Length: 369
Image 1 (cartoon, rainbow, N blue to C red):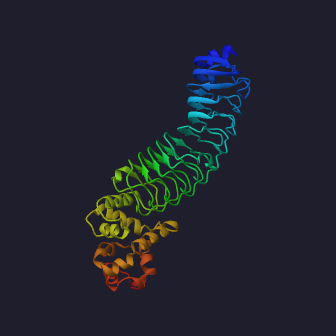
Image 2 (cartoon, one colour):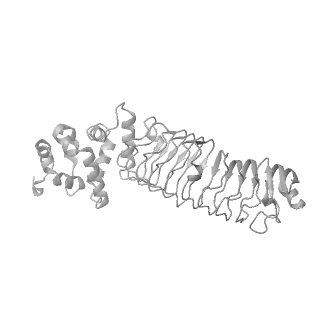
Image 3 (tube, rainbow, N blue to C red):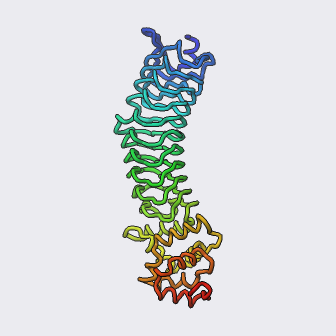
């Protein structure tokens, strides 16, 4: 035993009342003879003033482990399915990449938790904590469907990506560092943190809106969602700090919405953005918009996206109230395009003035004009 402890302990150790107390750190990987079997026993530890590291040793139980750890307790990359016999006290608790289905038994006083890559299904074990001063890493827990029990304040980063979340209900209200909730099934950011000190990653979800996001973040990744509008996006940054690729609406059009949002003091209006774009002087963006609305390859879902956008901006209403704003659109609409299909299907809602302009701009007699 002495030979193994001398190899694994950086500091001093003593055997007292049948338990090994360490003044310093312990690293079980430094001796080939420690944990030859998948357990800590026959060693029985008491108090460790520094870090206790038994990561990557294929251990199946924490029985025999220390009662108290002054710094970090590391049991990641093992075969654990529970934290029974783990330390009652440890500043930082790292138990990633095991087979845990809960955090029951985790240290009462830990300021930082990394429990990624497990099978955790709930956070009830954390429900008695108002805050955690460090990070809380819970990514890649595919059985985690809700965040009930999550502390309300996280001092540093919170990562709940690649779980099975459909809602952020129960999430922390304030995150001092980065907030990552990507690769889930979120349709809304409602109930998410209202303050995020770092970046906000909500990519690879099913978001149709950014409502519920904080007013100010360092940058945001909302790529690979279902956005046609940036309504609700943080207003205190430029389009260069928000990533919007691979959404329903093209990135350049979504970026132009962010630009429009940050240039006005009023609440974002999709209708006002559309009118500003289609009647404004930004020729490349106007051209991009018309290419999107006229693209004959946009059939099925893509056509539905165009119809959804035109419904949300209420194109027919614009034609009735300010038909002059649609002069460029009426001059550039193409036959057999999703835009023309939309106008035909909703013809009775459009103003006569707009329809007259449309007829003058194109030979549409074969379409019933």
